[in-house]
Image 1: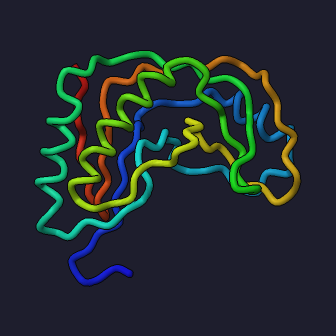
Image 2: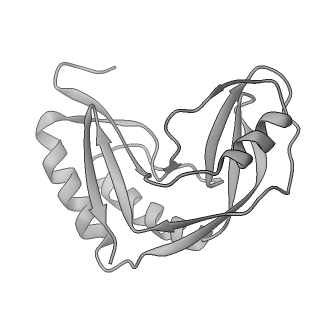
Amino acid sequence: MLHVGDWFSFVSIKGFSIPEDVFQQAEALSACKRRVDDQHISLSRMFSLREIEIEGFVDDVRAAVEGIESFELTCNGFRCFQDRFSALMVRRGKKQLDNLVDCIDQVLLQYSKPLYYEDRQHHISLYEHESDFEESESCKTVKIRVTKLTINCGNREFLVELA
């Protein structure tokens, strides 16, 4: 339960674009209801921060990922999550993503917040859908250069640059 001064927060990778033909491939696999507006790769679960914790949390994440170099991800193939989201799967760069999640989890522990999922399946949600989604191992390969993380706290956004 949120209290006055608490903000929903999460850490992710944003700032990339997915080619339109990849969306079309995903749409062809199911009766897609609505495109997800904000494509991102989650590096944390949703959690709440008190107003007075935000600045310290952002500084702690910056310190935790200091020295981690930017890297490239390769995404390919579609999968269904929570029986309602079609997602583009990360195929290469998983170790680097896991390293970032581990660093962020260490900060979340300090703030007594929930850690990321044990079964890490890094992905980009593309569509919400109403019916069965036919999973596919192939689609156009998408490459994403990861140079920064985004921390969202309520309506504020903080960027954390990688080395």
